[in-house]
Image 1 (cartoon, rainbow, N blue to C red):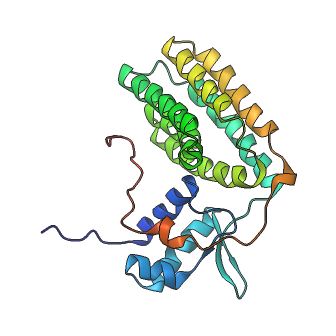
Image 2: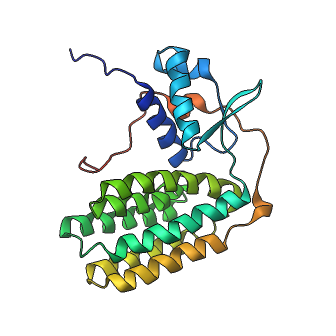
Length: 239
């Protein structure tokens, strides 16, 4: 019988980040130390280390006498998130060269999965896939540093979207993704760069401060963080 995988603060932090990416943890969600400790079968000290790590990265905050919460980005934070993406992502595709056929196949399948989720009305999967496309793209272009940056930027975008964007233009975003992949497949990185910049600008233009819902979040920690939940595949793992 295989030994149980040791739970570390890094693994708890990674599960929290994945839960933000998938929309299971929303802005303002309370993160109870004891409950997380019980879920993972670890001490509160280890959980606190994970939460402090996430606080340093800007994803959780501690509120005096109240505990830990997923951050609720301000509208300025939202605009800065897209400003950062506008600097990083067009340059990423411009300098990428032409992706290998296996990478293009994976990107096309990702777009197909987006469209399937949109057609099925699966809001949770659709939102995750649309954000994850940008992580998948970085992975397929083979830059590990940019992939790590895109994971964090995608998580920030997920929090921003939950507060300040409607979900009404999902197919438009998926069509943008398809056009970017087609440009890369054709070896036209300059076009891919222009398309990516236009895509990010369109997302930023849809930010609406009046959409923010600051009502108390329901406690979804058990569903979001349960260790039995499958981890998101990373580069080099089967999808």
